Length: 272
Image 1: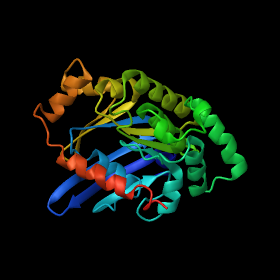
Image 2: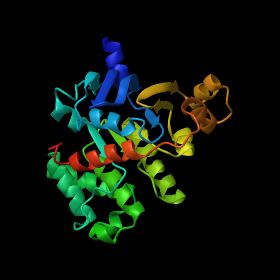
Image 3: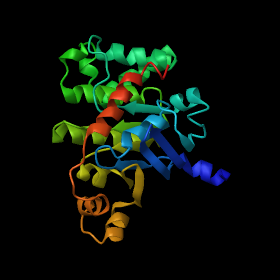
Image 4: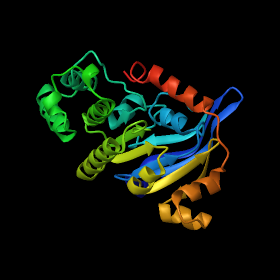
């Protein structure tokens, strides 16, 4: 890997494999994500999306292959990698018995953000996601969309180079989804932050992502811009391109659910 490539690509994955006994969840995948890029992972249930994110974010050890995030190897230098990313999971992970401000303060302590820096950053981010007026309210009183906005703010607190979003708008109404993506796009541009997200919403991937990787049965079957994917499959929409590449049969959700449960168990205790 040359120095120019290191500078251009903040995420580099090469021949990555993850096996669970006889199940090959991720099967020799390779891809790169540029610094400041908004990159999407699309795939049917159980395709390996969450497993890939778990390996990139140090929650799972790969069976084989190589990865670098912001110049560090997640398997060998976990602390450096963890400082370089923020993450928002599918299900709420904020503490509902704490206020919005307390949740942010706790995250600042975990990431060792100095208090004089964190107080300003917390105010800036809570204003950014329109929750500053609710900073002293318990999170248990928040709607699903408000909790997700708080999680986005929390994930951005330590100025991460990369923000991982695993199905961040699942179950939210269209207005809330649009607001969350507006925040994410604005902060990505403002701070030159890379965004790596998974989604089941085709229109989100089409509108938000600069490039998309389609993963199916643990393998990346295509990667490119929306136009490139449509041209490759000779289709008129991203949805048709996706179905052309992955098939039209309904997929079992068991593998996807297993991945997510494992993520939720590990997400804080294993990171600190």
